[in-house]
Figure 1: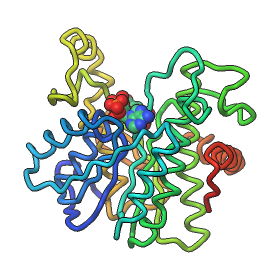
Figure 2 (figure 1 turned 120 degrees about the vertical axis):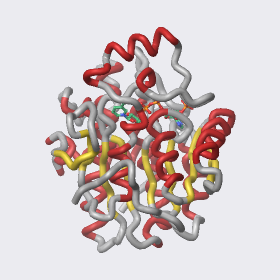
Figure 3 (figure 1 turned 90 degrees about the vertical axis):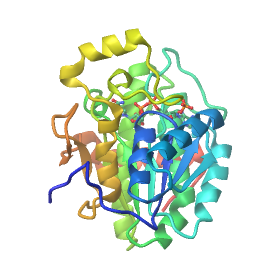
Figure 4 (figure 1 turned 135 degrees about the horizontal axis):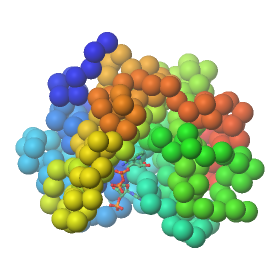
Amino acid sequence: MTWNPNDLPLQTGKVVAVTGANAGIGFWTAYALAGTGASVILLTRNSKRADAAVQAIRAHVPTADLTVVPLDVADLGSVRDAGARLADLPRLDVLVNNAGIVHAPRRRELTADGLELVTGTNFFGAFALTAAALPALERTSGSRIVSLGSLASMLVRLNTDDLQQERRYSGWNAYAYSKIMLSSFGYELDRRLVARGSGTRSLVAHPGYSISGRTRTVPGVNEPSRLGRFVDTLQTPFTQGKEDGASPIVRAAIDPAAEGGTFYGPRYLMKGEPVAMKPARITTDERVAAAIWAEAEVATGIPLL
Ligand SMILES: NC(=O)c1ccc[n+]([C@@H]2O[C@H](COP(=O)([O-])OP(=O)(O)OC[C@H]3O[C@@H](n4cnc5c(N)ncnc54)[C@H](OP(=O)(O)O)[C@@H]3O)[C@@H](O)[C@H]2O)c1
C-alpha cells in the first residue's frame, strides 16, 4: 500500500501517548499526530520544555487536544506514576516509546534505581511504562506500541551475559545495546501479544540519521546554534531533519495496513520516505529476546506477560 507522509489519515477520537515529546523525534511525532486530530499525551520530564512543545503544536493545530504527563523514564517511581495515569484512560490507541539518551556518557553511570543509565533510560523505563499502560491499550481495539530502534543495532555484538555492561562499558555500546534491547523487546512483545490472543500489536521504527541542524527552528524545542546548523548542513547528503525522521514512527503508529512486528525506517536507510524494512538479525533472535526480557523483569521488578 502507498503511504503519503504529507496526507495522514484522520485519527479523530484516538488517543496517542509519546514519551520524550518535548524535543526531537518525539516532538515531531506528537506534532504530526496532533495534526491528524488524535488527542496527544506528551510524556516529558521537564515542564518548561513541555510548555514550549505544547505552544508550538498549538500554533500548528489550534484545536489540538494535548495533555502533558510528567515522566522521567530513568526513574521507575516516575514511570509507575505516569503508567498509572495511562492505565486509567478509557482508551489508549498508541504508545510511542521514544524518550532516550542519544549521546551516552563516556563512563558508566547509574539511574536512581541502580541500573546502567542508558539501558535504564532507553529500555527498562520503556519496558515498565509499557507494562503499566497495557491494560488501557488492550481495552482499545487495534491499539499499538511503537518502540524506537536504530541502525546502531547492526553495528555491535551484543553480550547477553553483560547487558548492563558491568564488566566492560563503552558509551557507544551502551547506546547500541539499549537500542537492540528495545527493538528486541518490541518484536518479542508482538509475539507474546499474538500468543495470548491480544488485539494490541507492537511495532518497531527508526528515524534514520536525523539531526537538529537540519530541522526547522522551533522556539524552546529546536534551537541549534549557527555553528551547529553549519556543521549539520555539511552532512546533508546522508541526513534529514527530525520532522522527516518522525515519519516512520508516525507510519508505524497509524498506517491502517501496518502489521505487528513490522520494522519501519527511511527508504535510503538514513533518510527518505518511510518504508517497511528488514530488522537487524540480533533484534529478532528469540533466544536473545528471552534473555533481554528476563533482564528487564529483574531490573524493573515487573513480570510482564
Ligand atoms: N536522531 C536520530 O538520528 C536517531 C537515530 C536512531 C534512533 N533514534 C532514537 O530516537 C529517539 C529520539 O532521539 P532524538 O534524536 O529525538 O533525541 P533528542 O533530540 O535528544 O530527544 C530525546 C528526547 O528524549 C527525552 N528524554 C531523554 N531522557 C529522558 C528521561 N530520562 N525521561 C524522559 N524523557 C527523556 C528528552 O527530553 P529532555 O529534553 O528532557 O532531555 C527528549 O525529549 C531515541 O530513542 C533515539 O535512540 C534517533
